[in-house]
Length: 481
Image 1 (cartoon, rainbow, N blue to C red):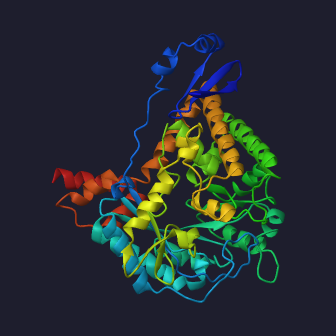
Image 2: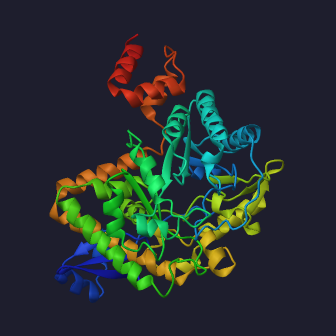
Image 3: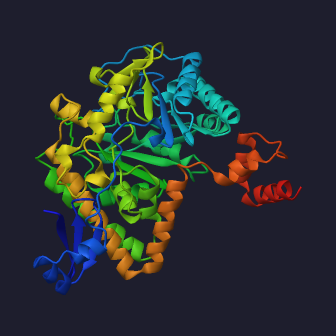
């Protein structure tokens, strides 16, 4: 089969199995296609093969993620946490600086570097270290004249006004883990004494005066399946929302055969809700999902921009995580998984192990006949490990969910584009703007490269971020001189 069909009113959406492209055709065109006329498929590039990178190239990833496992200590005992054993090993700023330097040297041609000191615990338990890392990122940005951006996720219980001020002074962007309404949140995200954390977290969030860049990280479990309710609630406080399924599937409320049907129904309701709100002129909900790292949001963005991906993620290829014991893993969630250990601070990255990870992520032979292949990217190695004890297995339940999200994203695209071209154009521009955030700022680079410029990278970026008008004046003066 070279394509699959999705019913769309009285028409058909054809989705290519070869490259994931889609076209909308009427019944007459569809009947013609059924009698072996492939012209419409050829004309719309449905039969084009996608050129894939076969050998790993470190320049493939323009954004490089540097994760620092600063600590595994936590003041909460979330029921679904994948970190069951916690030690007291701490990272210090000397080690953190060295790792940041090493990874930047490993990827000198990257356009941007993101440093994440979240670890597998609560990062704000050592706020001094976190702020020191933020300060070093500023120093490194000035040194290499590229953005080294510190970002973290906190559980929010320690996010006092003083902590917020210190994080922002250090230039650190942060998001908050919160699972929706109080009942849903407190069923899983609890203190060690069993008490819920929602009240404390919400109080801290409300005390943040400027929430422009604040994001919500939602863990989808069996306890908070009502996604419309979750979106309505969190949209009041967060301009960016990310919903992701719980990683471990071993009886901790994760997505499984028992609840996948209901989970899919809830996502269908969410998509209908997004369509209604968007066509009604309220773009805040779709904007929140697109601005975050949300599962459905990523699918919608990739469908709208016709963006194809070769690997599900950049784990171990453009993303590296340093554990407190100085071992290097593919990503923060991989800490302590031997199969995903790819080096150490002393020895550097083991190229053979890295090539092994590349093979797992890029060799998606089990996905060959899936229409979502170039939007989904394949299975998460962590999910595979927890579900099957191996990093290269597919999970039928998660595949079912992601194929469903893929089809919902396609329907969202065609519903909005067919009913309101202006709104669809605004959403597309938002998608382009989101992707531009992960590229080098050309205007900033031009200003930095001007011989008359006397500002550092962080100084110039601050001017541009706080007043585009002043930045353009400064740029204009430098150019005319």
